[in-house]
Image (cartoon, rainbow, N blue to C red; front, side, top):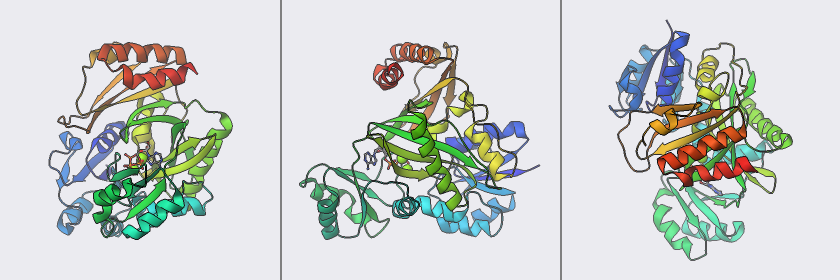
Length: 380
Ligand code: ATP
Ligand code: MG
Ligand code: MG
Protein backbone atom coordinates (compact mmCIF):
# COMPACT_ATOMS: atom_id res chain seq x y z
CA UNK A 1 0.00 0.00 0.00
CA UNK A 2 1.52 3.32 -1.10
CA UNK A 3 1.03 6.41 1.05
CA UNK A 4 1.31 9.81 -0.60
CA UNK A 5 2.24 12.66 1.74
CA UNK A 6 0.88 16.09 0.90
CA UNK A 7 2.30 19.27 2.43
CA UNK A 8 -0.71 21.52 2.86
CA UNK A 9 -4.17 20.20 3.66
CA UNK A 10 -6.51 22.51 1.75
CA UNK A 11 -9.01 21.76 -0.99
CA UNK A 12 -6.28 20.76 -3.45
CA UNK A 13 -5.04 18.04 -1.08
CA UNK A 14 -8.64 17.01 -0.53
CA UNK A 15 -9.29 16.63 -4.26
CA UNK A 16 -5.97 14.81 -4.74
CA UNK A 17 -6.99 12.30 -2.08
CA UNK A 18 -10.45 11.87 -3.62
CA UNK A 19 -8.94 11.14 -7.02
CA UNK A 20 -6.34 8.76 -5.57
CA UNK A 21 -8.79 6.50 -3.78
CA UNK A 22 -9.66 4.40 -6.87
CA UNK A 23 -5.93 3.90 -7.48
CA UNK A 24 -5.71 2.23 -4.08
CA UNK A 25 -3.59 5.02 -2.60
CA UNK A 26 -3.42 6.13 1.00
CA UNK A 27 -2.75 9.73 1.97
CA UNK A 28 -1.27 11.70 4.84
CA UNK A 29 -1.47 15.49 4.88
CA UNK A 30 0.54 17.95 6.92
CA UNK A 31 -0.84 21.37 7.74
CA UNK A 32 -0.35 24.09 10.32
CA UNK A 33 -4.13 24.32 10.89
CA UNK A 34 -5.94 21.53 12.72
CA UNK A 35 -9.15 22.33 10.80
CA UNK A 36 -7.58 22.12 7.32
CA UNK A 37 -10.34 20.78 5.07
CA UNK A 38 -8.47 17.73 3.71
CA UNK A 39 -8.20 16.55 7.32
CA UNK A 40 -11.94 15.86 7.36
CA UNK A 41 -11.24 12.48 5.79
CA UNK A 42 -7.48 12.16 5.39
CA UNK A 43 -5.11 11.45 8.32
CA UNK A 44 -3.18 14.58 9.19
CA UNK A 45 -0.01 15.68 10.97
CA UNK A 46 -0.59 19.14 12.45
CA UNK A 47 2.55 21.19 12.83
CA UNK A 48 4.72 23.98 11.53
CA UNK A 49 6.57 23.10 8.32
CA UNK A 50 9.83 24.16 10.00
CA UNK A 51 9.24 21.89 13.02
CA UNK A 52 11.67 19.00 12.54
CA UNK A 53 9.78 16.66 14.88
CA UNK A 54 6.52 17.12 12.96
CA UNK A 55 8.28 16.82 9.60
CA UNK A 56 10.08 13.66 10.81
CA UNK A 57 6.81 12.07 11.81
CA UNK A 58 5.31 13.01 8.44
CA UNK A 59 8.32 11.61 6.54
CA UNK A 60 8.30 8.35 8.48
CA UNK A 61 4.72 7.58 7.48
CA UNK A 62 4.85 8.26 3.70
CA UNK A 63 6.43 6.81 0.54
CA UNK A 64 6.49 9.97 -1.57
CA UNK A 65 5.79 13.64 -0.87
CA UNK A 66 4.11 16.42 -2.85
CA UNK A 67 2.50 19.82 -2.22
CA UNK A 68 -0.92 21.39 -2.19
CA UNK A 69 0.50 24.91 -1.90
CA UNK A 70 3.70 26.55 -3.01
CA UNK A 71 4.61 28.44 0.12
CA UNK A 72 6.01 25.52 2.07
CA UNK A 73 9.51 26.71 3.12
CA UNK A 74 11.96 25.54 0.43
CA UNK A 75 14.34 24.36 3.20
CA UNK A 76 11.62 22.07 4.57
CA UNK A 77 11.10 20.57 1.11
CA UNK A 78 14.86 20.12 0.82
CA UNK A 79 15.06 18.48 4.26
CA UNK A 80 12.24 16.13 3.32
CA UNK A 81 13.87 15.24 -0.01
CA UNK A 82 16.80 13.72 1.87
CA UNK A 83 14.36 11.21 3.38
CA UNK A 84 11.67 10.51 0.76
CA UNK A 85 11.25 11.29 -2.95
CA UNK A 86 9.69 14.77 -3.31
CA UNK A 87 7.88 15.87 -6.49
CA UNK A 88 8.03 18.49 -7.88
CA UNK A 89 11.69 18.83 -6.92
CA UNK A 90 12.65 21.50 -4.35
CA UNK A 91 14.49 23.60 -6.95
CA UNK A 92 11.34 23.89 -9.07
CA UNK A 93 9.39 24.81 -5.95
CA UNK A 94 11.96 27.44 -4.91
CA UNK A 95 11.90 29.01 -8.39
CA UNK A 96 8.11 29.23 -8.45
CA UNK A 97 8.06 30.72 -4.93
CA UNK A 98 9.95 33.82 -5.99
CA UNK A 99 8.45 36.06 -8.66
CA UNK A 100 11.91 37.41 -9.49
CA UNK A 101 13.50 33.96 -10.00
CA UNK A 102 10.43 32.83 -11.93
CA UNK A 103 10.34 35.80 -14.31
CA UNK A 104 14.11 35.67 -14.78
CA UNK A 105 13.79 32.02 -15.84
CA UNK A 106 10.89 32.81 -18.21
CA UNK A 107 13.05 35.47 -19.84
CA UNK A 108 16.08 33.16 -20.10
CA UNK A 109 13.91 30.58 -21.85
CA UNK A 110 12.63 33.12 -24.36
CA UNK A 111 9.13 33.24 -22.84
CA UNK A 112 7.94 36.88 -23.06
CA UNK A 113 7.15 38.62 -19.73
CA UNK A 114 5.89 42.08 -18.77
CA UNK A 115 8.73 44.47 -17.87
CA UNK A 116 9.82 43.99 -14.25
CA UNK A 117 12.35 45.24 -11.72
CA UNK A 118 13.31 44.16 -8.23
CA UNK A 119 12.73 46.82 -5.58
CA UNK A 120 14.65 47.15 -2.31
CA UNK A 121 14.30 50.86 -1.56
CA UNK A 122 11.92 53.76 -2.09
CA UNK A 123 14.42 55.32 -4.54
CA UNK A 124 14.43 52.15 -6.62
CA UNK A 125 10.64 52.23 -6.70
CA UNK A 126 10.64 55.75 -8.17
CA UNK A 127 13.33 54.82 -10.69
CA UNK A 128 11.49 51.62 -11.69
CA UNK A 129 8.17 53.46 -12.13
CA UNK A 130 9.96 55.90 -14.43
CA UNK A 131 11.59 53.06 -16.39
CA UNK A 132 8.60 50.70 -16.64
CA UNK A 133 5.95 53.39 -17.01
CA UNK A 134 2.40 53.69 -15.69
CA UNK A 135 0.24 51.88 -14.85
CA UNK A 136 2.27 49.25 -13.05
CA UNK A 137 1.85 46.88 -10.15
CA UNK A 138 3.98 46.41 -7.05
CA UNK A 139 3.98 42.85 -5.67
CA UNK A 140 5.70 40.94 -2.90
CA UNK A 141 8.20 38.53 -4.44
CA UNK A 142 7.15 35.71 -2.13
CA UNK A 143 4.09 34.44 -0.25
CA UNK A 144 1.41 36.22 -2.31
CA UNK A 145 -1.71 34.37 -3.44
CA UNK A 146 -5.23 35.30 -4.58
CA UNK A 147 -3.95 38.80 -5.36
CA UNK A 148 -2.74 39.42 -1.79
CA UNK A 149 0.47 41.44 -1.38
CA UNK A 150 -0.14 43.58 -4.47
CA UNK A 151 -0.64 47.29 -5.03
CA UNK A 152 -1.67 48.84 -8.33
CA UNK A 153 0.18 52.05 -9.17
CA UNK A 154 -2.04 54.04 -11.53
CA UNK A 155 -0.48 57.50 -11.22
CA UNK A 156 2.86 58.83 -9.97
CA UNK A 157 1.03 59.99 -6.84
CA UNK A 158 0.21 56.34 -5.97
CA UNK A 159 3.89 55.58 -5.32
CA UNK A 160 3.63 56.86 -1.72
CA UNK A 161 0.61 54.68 -0.96
CA UNK A 162 2.23 51.66 -2.63
CA UNK A 163 5.36 52.08 -0.53
CA UNK A 164 3.28 52.60 2.59
CA UNK A 165 1.35 49.40 1.90
CA UNK A 166 4.24 47.15 0.93
CA UNK A 167 7.56 48.95 1.65
CA UNK A 168 8.00 47.13 4.96
CA UNK A 169 8.08 43.86 2.99
CA UNK A 170 11.12 44.95 0.95
CA UNK A 171 13.58 43.61 3.51
CA UNK A 172 11.47 40.53 4.31
CA UNK A 173 9.93 38.78 1.33
CA UNK A 174 11.23 41.23 -1.29
CA UNK A 175 9.31 43.33 -3.82
CA UNK A 176 8.99 43.40 -7.58
CA UNK A 177 7.46 46.05 -9.82
CA UNK A 178 5.78 44.84 -13.00
CA UNK A 179 4.29 46.66 -15.94
CA UNK A 180 0.49 46.44 -15.86
CA UNK A 181 -0.69 44.49 -18.90
CA UNK A 182 -3.92 45.71 -20.51
CA UNK A 183 -4.74 42.17 -21.55
CA UNK A 184 -7.72 41.08 -23.66
CA UNK A 185 -7.86 37.79 -21.85
CA UNK A 186 -6.13 35.62 -19.28
CA UNK A 187 -5.20 32.06 -20.13
CA UNK A 188 -3.60 29.17 -18.33
CA UNK A 189 -1.85 26.05 -19.46
CA UNK A 190 -2.45 23.19 -17.05
CA UNK A 191 0.06 20.49 -17.85
CA UNK A 192 1.74 17.42 -16.41
CA UNK A 193 5.24 16.03 -16.77
CA UNK A 194 6.09 12.47 -15.77
CA UNK A 195 9.20 11.14 -14.06
CA UNK A 196 10.43 9.98 -17.49
CA UNK A 197 9.95 13.45 -19.00
CA UNK A 198 6.70 12.68 -20.82
CA UNK A 199 4.68 15.89 -21.20
CA UNK A 200 0.93 16.26 -21.61
CA UNK A 201 -1.32 19.30 -21.40
CA UNK A 202 -5.05 19.81 -21.13
CA UNK A 203 -6.70 22.15 -23.63
CA UNK A 204 -5.92 25.80 -22.89
CA UNK A 205 -8.19 27.42 -20.28
CA UNK A 206 -9.52 30.99 -20.26
CA UNK A 207 -9.84 32.64 -16.85
CA UNK A 208 -11.64 35.63 -15.35
CA UNK A 209 -10.49 37.14 -12.05
CA UNK A 210 -12.37 39.47 -9.72
CA UNK A 211 -10.24 41.51 -7.30
CA UNK A 212 -7.23 39.28 -8.09
CA UNK A 213 -9.12 36.06 -7.27
CA UNK A 214 -10.12 33.49 -9.90
CA UNK A 215 -13.86 33.66 -10.53
CA UNK A 216 -14.53 31.57 -13.65
CA UNK A 217 -12.62 29.24 -15.97
CA UNK A 218 -13.69 28.13 -19.44
CA UNK A 219 -12.24 25.27 -21.45
CA UNK A 220 -11.32 25.01 -24.19
CA UNK A 221 -10.27 28.67 -24.35
CA UNK A 222 -11.65 30.49 -27.37
CA UNK A 223 -8.29 31.07 -29.06
CA UNK A 224 -6.77 30.04 -32.37
CA UNK A 225 -4.71 26.90 -32.66
CA UNK A 226 -1.39 28.71 -33.23
CA UNK A 227 -1.71 30.68 -29.99
CA UNK A 228 -2.62 27.54 -28.05
CA UNK A 229 0.40 25.78 -29.51
CA UNK A 230 2.72 28.62 -28.47
CA UNK A 231 1.31 28.52 -24.94
CA UNK A 232 1.89 24.77 -24.71
CA UNK A 233 5.41 25.13 -26.09
CA UNK A 234 6.21 27.70 -23.35
CA UNK A 235 4.88 25.33 -20.68
CA UNK A 236 6.85 22.40 -22.01
CA UNK A 237 10.11 24.38 -22.19
CA UNK A 238 9.62 25.48 -18.59
CA UNK A 239 8.83 21.99 -17.31
CA UNK A 240 11.89 20.54 -19.06
CA UNK A 241 14.16 23.30 -17.73
CA UNK A 242 13.04 22.64 -14.15
CA UNK A 243 12.99 18.83 -14.57
CA UNK A 244 9.48 19.26 -13.25
CA UNK A 245 7.46 16.20 -12.19
CA UNK A 246 3.73 16.53 -11.60
CA UNK A 247 0.99 18.97 -12.59
CA UNK A 248 1.59 22.72 -12.85
CA UNK A 249 -0.11 25.75 -14.31
CA UNK A 250 1.44 28.52 -16.37
CA UNK A 251 -0.64 31.70 -16.14
CA UNK A 252 -0.53 33.87 -19.24
CA UNK A 253 -1.83 37.26 -20.35
CA UNK A 254 -2.90 37.63 -23.97
CA UNK A 255 -2.50 41.15 -25.35
CA UNK A 256 -2.77 42.03 -29.05
CA UNK A 257 -2.57 38.32 -29.84
CA UNK A 258 0.75 37.99 -27.94
CA UNK A 259 1.33 35.90 -24.84
CA UNK A 260 3.09 37.26 -21.74
CA UNK A 261 3.83 34.92 -18.83
CA UNK A 262 2.52 35.95 -15.41
CA UNK A 263 3.41 33.13 -13.04
CA UNK A 264 4.02 29.43 -12.58
CA UNK A 265 1.94 27.55 -10.00
CA UNK A 266 3.94 24.44 -9.00
CA UNK A 267 0.90 22.33 -8.16
CA UNK A 268 -2.56 21.36 -9.31
CA UNK A 269 -4.38 24.60 -10.08
CA UNK A 270 -7.80 26.15 -9.60
CA UNK A 271 -8.09 26.74 -13.36
CA UNK A 272 -7.78 22.96 -13.84
CA UNK A 273 -10.66 21.94 -11.56
CA UNK A 274 -12.90 21.47 -14.60
CA UNK A 275 -10.77 18.46 -15.59
CA UNK A 276 -12.45 16.36 -12.85
CA UNK A 277 -15.60 16.00 -14.91
CA UNK A 278 -14.50 17.61 -18.17
CA UNK A 279 -11.48 15.53 -19.19
CA UNK A 280 -10.63 11.89 -19.69
CA UNK A 281 -8.11 12.13 -16.82
CA UNK A 282 -8.27 14.87 -14.21
CA UNK A 283 -5.33 17.05 -13.16
CA UNK A 284 -5.51 15.43 -9.72
CA UNK A 285 -5.24 11.87 -10.98
CA UNK A 286 -2.46 12.77 -13.42
CA UNK A 287 -0.51 14.54 -10.70
CA UNK A 288 -0.59 11.35 -8.63
CA UNK A 289 0.30 9.20 -11.64
CA UNK A 290 3.27 11.49 -12.35
CA UNK A 291 4.70 11.56 -8.82
CA UNK A 292 4.31 7.78 -8.55
CA UNK A 293 5.98 7.12 -11.91
CA UNK A 294 2.80 5.56 -13.39
CA UNK A 295 1.74 6.00 -17.04
CA UNK A 296 0.05 9.39 -17.55
CA UNK A 297 -3.64 9.48 -18.46
CA UNK A 298 -5.16 11.02 -21.57
CA UNK A 299 -5.77 14.76 -21.19
CA UNK A 300 -8.38 15.13 -23.94
CA UNK A 301 -11.50 16.93 -22.91
CA UNK A 302 -15.08 15.74 -23.05
CA UNK A 303 -17.07 18.53 -24.69
CA UNK A 304 -16.98 22.03 -23.17
CA UNK A 305 -16.58 22.91 -19.52
CA UNK A 306 -16.92 25.91 -17.27
CA UNK A 307 -15.95 26.17 -13.61
CA UNK A 308 -17.50 28.70 -11.24
CA UNK A 309 -15.64 29.44 -8.02
CA UNK A 310 -17.59 29.95 -4.82
CA UNK A 311 -15.87 32.62 -2.74
CA UNK A 312 -16.81 33.52 0.83
CA UNK A 313 -19.82 31.24 1.25
CA UNK A 314 -21.51 28.38 -0.57
CA UNK A 315 -24.62 29.22 -2.60
CA UNK A 316 -27.59 26.87 -2.73
CA UNK A 317 -26.68 23.74 -4.69
CA UNK A 318 -29.98 22.98 -6.41
CA UNK A 319 -29.61 25.28 -9.46
CA UNK A 320 -26.36 23.52 -10.38
CA UNK A 321 -27.52 20.02 -9.49
CA UNK A 322 -30.61 20.49 -11.69
CA UNK A 323 -28.41 20.93 -14.77
CA UNK A 324 -27.68 17.77 -16.78
CA UNK A 325 -23.93 18.53 -16.79
CA UNK A 326 -23.80 20.21 -13.37
CA UNK A 327 -21.33 19.06 -10.70
CA UNK A 328 -20.97 20.37 -7.17
CA UNK A 329 -17.89 20.62 -4.97
CA UNK A 330 -18.18 21.79 -1.36
CA UNK A 331 -14.78 21.89 0.35
CA UNK A 332 -16.28 21.68 3.84
CA UNK A 333 -14.79 25.02 4.92
CA UNK A 334 -16.40 27.55 7.18
CA UNK A 335 -17.49 30.73 5.40
CA UNK A 336 -15.08 33.68 5.40
CA UNK A 337 -14.84 36.72 3.11
CA UNK A 338 -12.50 36.10 0.18
CA UNK A 339 -12.04 32.42 0.97
CA UNK A 340 -12.42 29.75 -1.73
CA UNK A 341 -15.07 27.46 -0.22
CA UNK A 342 -16.18 25.41 -3.23
CA UNK A 343 -16.81 25.35 -6.96
CA UNK A 344 -19.20 24.02 -9.58
CA UNK A 345 -18.33 22.56 -12.95
CA UNK A 346 -20.74 22.59 -15.87
CA UNK A 347 -20.12 20.31 -18.78
CA UNK A 348 -21.94 20.38 -22.12
CA UNK A 349 -21.56 18.94 -25.58
CA UNK A 350 -21.88 22.31 -27.32
CA UNK A 351 -20.98 25.93 -26.57
CA UNK A 352 -24.66 26.87 -26.95
CA UNK A 353 -25.64 24.24 -24.40
CA UNK A 354 -22.97 25.48 -22.00
CA UNK A 355 -24.04 29.11 -22.42
CA UNK A 356 -27.70 28.22 -21.78
CA UNK A 357 -26.77 26.26 -18.68
CA UNK A 358 -24.67 29.15 -17.37
CA UNK A 359 -27.49 31.62 -17.92
CA UNK A 360 -29.96 29.45 -16.00
CA UNK A 361 -27.52 29.15 -13.11
CA UNK A 362 -26.66 32.85 -13.12
CA UNK A 363 -30.36 33.69 -12.94
CA UNK A 364 -31.14 30.95 -10.42
CA UNK A 365 -28.45 32.08 -8.01
CA UNK A 366 -28.64 35.81 -8.69
CA UNK A 367 -25.07 35.64 -9.97
CA UNK A 368 -25.60 37.01 -13.47
CA UNK A 369 -22.46 39.14 -13.24
CA UNK A 370 -20.28 36.11 -12.51
CA UNK A 371 -21.44 34.14 -15.57
CA UNK A 372 -21.86 37.09 -17.95
CA UNK A 373 -18.25 37.33 -19.27
CA UNK A 374 -18.26 33.64 -20.14
CA UNK A 375 -21.66 33.80 -21.84
CA UNK A 376 -20.32 36.71 -23.91
CA UNK A 377 -17.11 34.84 -24.77
CA UNK A 378 -19.13 31.80 -25.86
CA UNK A 379 -21.23 33.99 -28.15
CA UNK A 380 -18.14 35.33 -29.96
P1 ATP B 1 -2.81 33.32 -7.61
O1 ATP B 1 -3.96 33.10 -6.71
O2 ATP B 1 -3.13 33.13 -9.08
O3 ATP B 1 -1.55 32.61 -7.20
P2 ATP B 1 -1.31 35.73 -7.05
O4 ATP B 1 -1.60 36.39 -5.77
O5 ATP B 1 -0.06 34.95 -7.19
O6 ATP B 1 -2.56 34.90 -7.53
P3 ATP B 1 -1.11 37.06 -9.64
O7 ATP B 1 -1.49 35.87 -10.39
O8 ATP B 1 0.22 37.66 -9.91
O9 ATP B 1 -1.30 36.92 -8.09
O10 ATP B 1 -2.21 38.22 -9.89
C1 ATP B 1 -3.59 37.97 -9.68
C2 ATP B 1 -4.37 38.59 -10.83
O11 ATP B 1 -4.13 40.03 -10.85
C3 ATP B 1 -3.93 38.11 -12.20
O12 ATP B 1 -4.53 36.88 -12.55
C4 ATP B 1 -4.41 39.29 -13.05
O13 ATP B 1 -5.80 39.26 -13.23
C5 ATP B 1 -4.04 40.48 -12.19
N1 ATP B 1 -2.64 40.89 -12.48
C6 ATP B 1 -1.52 40.50 -11.82
N2 ATP B 1 -0.41 41.01 -12.37
C7 ATP B 1 -0.82 41.75 -13.42
C8 ATP B 1 -0.15 42.54 -14.41
N3 ATP B 1 1.19 42.69 -14.41
N4 ATP B 1 -0.90 43.15 -15.34
C9 ATP B 1 -2.26 43.03 -15.35
N5 ATP B 1 -2.95 42.32 -14.45
C10 ATP B 1 -2.26 41.68 -13.50
MG1 MG C 1 0.32 33.00 -7.51
MG1 MG D 1 -1.89 33.99 -10.38
